[in-house]
Image: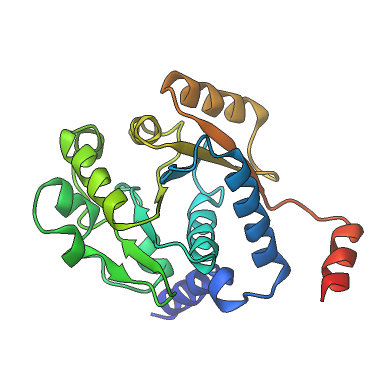
Length: 231
């Protein structure tokens, strides 16, 4: 029981965009938002995928906080947990994961009844739902295309958190369907060869790579100076 409570507190602390909006980390997420906006292929870009080469590189935390700072900018944002093998979004926002994306892809339920409020103005959540036995087949089905079109009609921006690229094929399928893809790299963990393989996988899937987020990067003293200066 103690471990579970500790895990929930840890997940909540990762949402710095909500809990610490004036922090240096949150400001870095806003900088990433600006850089992504400059990299968008067109003004009507609505779907952005966040993925990584391997597991535990910070892509879920990054996608959560990016969704928060995009909602902060005035956009209507939907954050989707498309990691139907190891979903985490319900942990981050401390919600029940009984229904979600998997249910909708099986045509069980409606989008407007399935999304959940995040507690952040402008940000809704589509959790994973029940973990299916065939996530790759569900994601490659026409049902996802139809669902994405409905999402685009209801929201300004859809941010999708997906599984690691080198572990399963799910992210390659999703990257092909999204307008842009961001690769999250753990600077203290990810091997260069893994990053190259992940890039090649995205190129093979004909994804539009918006850029790379360097996670766990050690800032220099100058970065701290300018942050303090702006305050």
